[in-house]
Image (cartoon, rainbow, N blue to C red; front, side, top):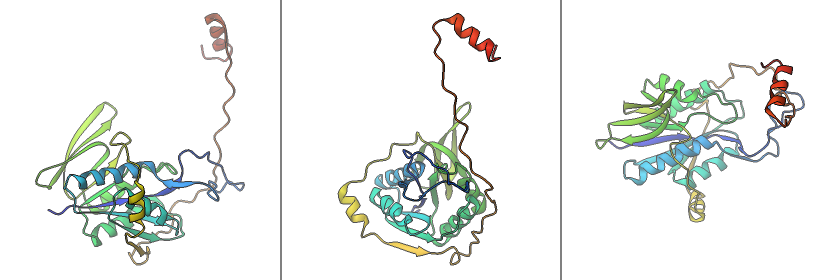
Length: 252
């Protein structure tokens, strides 16, 4: 079996940037803010590349959805090792169901048999897309994967996943969906030579309409607010003083 992996990559506000709320409280400020690839998606790209380096994968296809700037994220994915990219261009807000439907369509048209994606995006923290697309495709899913092993016959995957009580091991028949956890791997840094090569790799443009997907949002955000400011801490000089403070604030 020739293994072809589809890896979605999302353009998000960089993890090191302090988030600011818009003055009208309609969302998060993204103008003139540093953007980068979702860290969990970087892990997904890295895992796909490692499988290809072992000679187990024929092709890695990166896909991103959104405005024109998403092509920068796709170039980053190709610099890390993706072979080609698909940009689904839209200016509409994309919610998990719409993203999953787009991935469902692409998985079929691109004849991919493995979908590897980050377990969640750090901007909305939904943690829904992988599970939804697995349901739409009718494929088995291994979520929160901390280790992935492909069988010699390339017909199944062994996935170790983190659960509340420890580690759970699953065996999934291909085609399947994998969502990547933080401890799966440590993504590499792209080499300058690979960044230059990525400029020449193809990016195919598509639209949700071409894929037959309605991306109209089903959920409306009413208001976005910053979390309440934490009160400053108080230093105490003894255990007795600590106890008195706890009693004073009703904790004891």
